[in-house]
Image (cartoon, rainbow, N blue to C red; front, top):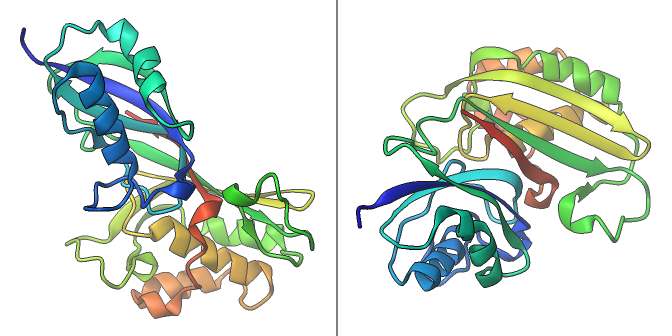
Length: 246
């Protein structure tokens, strides 16, 4: 039987994992899914994820592909893999994909959401999925700053210093800050992200929201092309990959 390519959409709670990418001796999403595929199909396959989410980061719409030679019908993969996976990882859909489909290179945009809870007492039912930062934040000022990030720009100031990719130019297609009672939601969509870029970006509007900087400081930070010019990185548990478009 010839190999076929399958496309998965999956969600996971990243709290117990060291990110997506396989790492020796550490629990990761990729390794856990690959182990389930191997048990189901009695053969190994590399599961390639579109986004290499960091340790502790969650996903509602991660996309992955893998090549497999197995008699297991595609229609059975979702239920069968979910029976083999731990409770904090779920396959939402599994479908046949063209042989040249690539979960990474075919990506058009990725949408992330960062959640901040600002009330004095931590939200125990949601604490794994937000940054509890007590104290009011000016969401209007934060949203003004977010709009200055839109477009094709050099985001070197928001990349981890150790990021060695040749180009730090990316296009942010959507960036907004919303407030609902004690919750702050920061949504960011782009054609791609540098290492830790989303968490580095969300730290800067937070500094603006607490009054350290004016929204226009974003322009100066972008011009600096220096990580030390921007705000601090935010904790990983507040970040969720919502959706990937192809």
